[in-house]
Image (tube, rainbow over all chains, first blue to last red; front, side):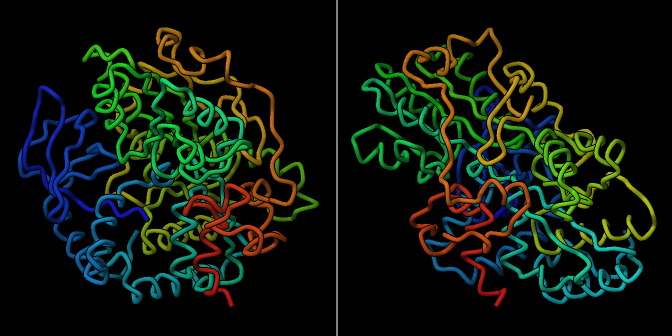
Length: 96
Length: 381
């Protein structure tokens, strides 16, 4: 399922073109190769198989995080982790 | 769109919103002169339609035709055999995305290759392949790249990063495919049979993720040249329903246009940085065989000549067979991918062919139409 949970940027490594993002408490490193504008700490981004694809507004991010919280609340811990980690894989790791 | 509903971001899955949209679609479709067949190109949309029972909410005049947008489902056995053969080389680590695990080739799946001792690793992100290559300098690490426009830039970024870091032991087997060419093929091949099938594709719901990268512009030809409207939609049930409503309105108002429902992250132009990176490493392939659909011109990508030394297909050409392989005789995945048949019309559906023992590729990936019908099919009873 394509969840696209907004993730918050917590650390940036310009040299490596990567950022550490926090997706509802799960932290991971993602590529920032495709962000046209400069990404800043505190920005919300949408991730797709290991890469940040675009920056979204905080308002939008918080609104959809609320929705996802409700969905995730219905899952057990393992399912939740999986949903957060795999939710951005919609194409061969998800769909077209 | 002037929906008199509260902000759609708030409740992508709110049953009330979904039902309200269904009601609007019912009202709007009263003005339709004939039924409208909408192909949802992408497996992610098929999954949403089945999971939330959207088919049952729509008037009879509106029908979904499930399309081939599932990169695992359309992967022909020949290519899976390549992965299998490469993985079995003693000095090779084969890296790919998780969905490829169970897909049966003619010799077996990658899962089987692994149980026979091959070093196959399934990763979340293509960048993991870089890490594996650096940790295993004595091995050839081959990244078996799959996916539509959505995952292509990630492979391009991986290639560029490996180059920047001077990593020499990472090769690529490229199976990236493109959406518009297969849509064109589906229209052309079906229009020839229109009298016999009587289920013309009237309109398309385009997947939003592809257009996040490639832009909505890639679909311009469909309304302009083929008279088929396209609405690029998100994957949540509310998005899909709104996409359907927009399409129905086009028909009742006599328009044939390209529209974007998923304005949250899709633009007409797409992500230009990603498009640039793709063009720096890939070019169109002359032909690519799609499982069940046959050879489709220019529907896939390959590495540019400058990267021939990293192209596993060229480097390992001696051991990789090129002859074509027939699909399983009983499997009608090809017809399903063409939108000519429903999964339930297959005689092995749910009996000899299940998600745990798939005969054909439509059952392998959770994105496949058969897998979605198997999982959520009881909604139909």
